[in-house]
Length: 83
Image 1 (cartoon, rainbow, N blue to C red):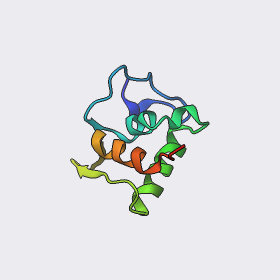
Image 2 (cartoon, rainbow, N blue to C red; image 1 turned 180 degrees about the vertical axis):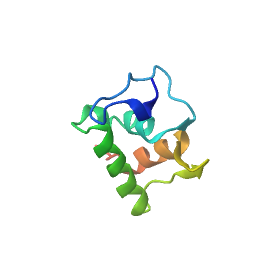
Image 3 (cartoon, rainbow, N blue to C red; image 1 turned 90 degrees about the vertical axis):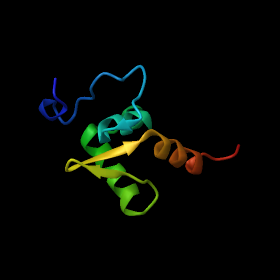
């Protein structure tokens, strides 16, 4: 099923292995936003917020926004508290 055809409140199945270049929905699942009460639509807004603040880097290619796995890992590293 094409992600554009999916209900904005339903998450697609979680990938077993995340690709190196992710869609916003895949990136949100990589960051586990799907497990924090977000919908795919609200998760994309959250990703956009972090991008607009310069906290998360993304790339535009073929008129779409993509996230590199290495950028998401760097973002998590910065956000992770030392406990």
